[in-house]
Image (tube, rainbow, N blue to C red; front, side, top):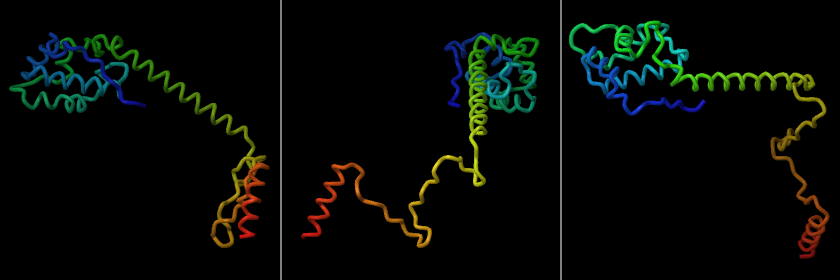
Length: 180
């Protein structure tokens, strides 16, 4: 899968919720933006339904570490601060998560299903082809080796071209070489 792009509105550093979170953590709104982006990316990869309460505390604290390192005094845990600032609803889900991430989550689910179906069809098709004891398909010629099994050297190949015009030109060339 290709890299995922996160949709970010230009107002994010000046958004009232960002400013509220920055005040609660006593840090700059730019630091909060970094935390929000990292958290959203984590959610897209590991909790695509948007339920922040399902994310382990240790993960949230690690994501918030740059913001919390500069905070002064006692700081609330990231989960509580995100609810207080309005980024996360009281039920634990990100505010408007489906509006922003819903299309991506749906597209990923459809892509996953499409690939699963393709692999299943491919497996069913390959199971219907009869195999001999060595695992090769019956009815297909065994590919000839380009190496002579006795000496390990390359086996000689017929240098004569296939078509009638090419064969007559090759014969004329051989006659010229032979007559010198």
